[in-house]
Every structure is written in structure tokens, then in C-alpha cells.
Length: 198
Image (cartoon, rainbow, N blue to C red; front, top):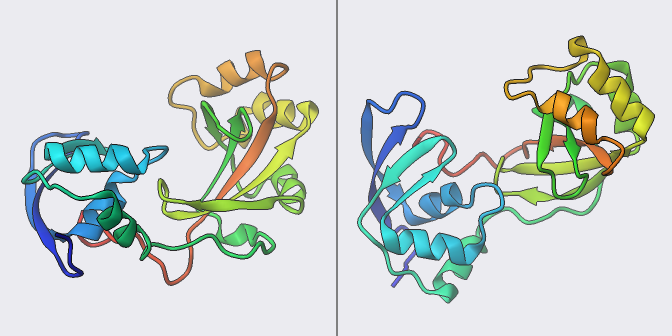
């Protein structure tokens, strides 16, 4: 039975080096928030809690298996940030700007320099999408014309990095899907629950 303040002992190891294992007491809501990575659904998180191990956010985690009901998980999640009333994007607060394909459910993401003039112009028409548990931030989206997307992809200096050839792949399929600029904006006063734990 979940009660506020319930903690569990988590062993945490970064996947990049895989050597140092850190053990710490995490509040259960912190573990749930950490597991709500990307597009993972609530029932997936329940299953992972019962298994006692998972990969999330570039780390391997282990804990004693936990039996958490749907109602209990709903109670935990109800304490997480909600979507806000739509309001204009403050581009200066964006932690990440990325060109994504397809626009709403991206499979390809190419980080773009936030100080590029075209990004500034596109940001003025960005709309609030939702609060995303993956980056633990508000997400804004502005659709791009094919010409705008091509301009941002054609010059490597306009990209922050491209570790996996995503920009080249995006250029090949740009005519098949809508592209967008996605702005990831951490919410002031709502740091991730695992900040200082992971």
C-alpha cells in the first residue's frame, strides 16, 4: 500500500560507464517519475515496478520488486506537474531546440542552435503542446515548411551535433512527413524529482 513518504532502496548505475553502482533511498514517486521516460505508459511503469529492474534515462536501476496498483499509481502521478494554460514561448528559457520528424510523434530528432535567426522567427508561432515526463519540461511545437526544414538541415553550422546521422536521414525523407521545431522548456520551480538523487 503506497503512502506519501514511502521510500525504496535503488541501485543506480550509469549505462555509459557501467562501473560505479550507487545505492540510495528514493521516494517511490521519484522512482515512478524516473521510469516515466519518453513515451513509456503508466501500465508499463507498473510492470517495471513489479519486475524490480529497468533501463531509463541512460541508467540501469534495480530495487526490490514493488506491487503498486493502478489507483496507487494514479495517486502518485497526481502530484506531478500538470499541463499549464497555453501561454507564449519564452525562447530564452528553452533547454533544447530540435527539428523533429514526424511533427507530433517524432522518430527523428536533430538538435538545432537556439540562436539561429530562423529559429527566432519560427518560435514566434510555436504553440504549447504539453508537459512531458521524458525531459520533465513543457514542450512547445512549431510546424515548419519544407523550405524552412531544408534550410536548417542543409548547413551543419546550424546544428548543435549529429551523433547518428539523423540530419542526413531527415533530409532524405523531409518531403514525406511534416517537420517541426520542438522547444523543451524546464518549468521554473518544478525540478525533476530525481534531481540530487541520480
